Length: 363
Ligand code: 1CP
Image (cartoon, rainbow, N blue to C red; front, side, top):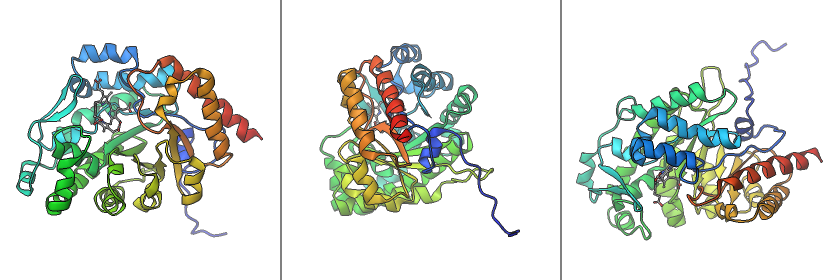
């Protein structure tokens, strides 16, 4: 007998965590990006009570309540912390507002290297204590078998908002910086890497079971720029995370770079466990390019929820049939839920994923 045999870490029981690690599951787990939000009447109710969006994010009891709403209503396989990626730049000292109908706004965008002196490195236990309190409140109420996903924006995606001053269509300011003043941009990304590592490690310490890095705007970069300004900072974050719990279990990391189906082989070098896909890359093609070492998350067009129940079911069937019996798939949409979808379409999607994936596995 080999007395030096390593003690293997406990196998997770939840469908979501098992699929994240490529383990066998009896049906495909499902959660939805932006599963909490304005399409739910019960969300709009709580948001009204909070006053505005940012006040909702900063109220741990109410933020926990809206986190749980879609999980309770639809029986989803994971909860995602209700917050926003832009609380990190705010904690670094920028002044953030969400203007009604216009989205996020920073009053003094960063334009040059000397502006970086205005940023501080936040202690998540201090400036982001409300997020950690929300995680603890969720964990107290969420059934133990449902995992909680924490998240952050990628440094590149956060930097677009900090340099453009808000949402952008053309990314003129940040691309000007990228080509004319890379020292400024790299200095900003470096500070964001450090801030996000501390932030995600604090989320893990306070009870999230997995983390997702949202790189919503990675796809506006060409291949070389994507590698240098989006992927490399994310890889430094992944390398800095405490992914081993005291009991030896693993905290999976999901990287979601929207519009980056052409860069999957680059994303695979990030060190993540799960690669999120938008709806432009066929799931089976992604698997054959990446091999079985990565779980995949996605990837129907969110607009499928405007279609009829029959069409939703047939699209789910088509997607799952094409992927077949392989392990390592988490069902999701290819991006967030739109505020004007009919919540009654969601159970159609959830049931279709469960029925079809069970049927395919039973063959
Ligand atoms: O009016 C409202 O109620 C605010 C709408 C809203 C909501 C519900 C915003 C403003 N953020 C959120 C929540 C949110 N944001 C979550 C919650 C968890 C969930 O249920 O999934 C998450 C994960 C985010 C992350 C986020 N915020 C991203 C990355 C993911 C994505 O959707 O691409 C980005 C880019 C933001 C910025 C942001 N927050 C809100 C707006 C309107 C925007 C701008 C989006 C843009 O520039 O197009």
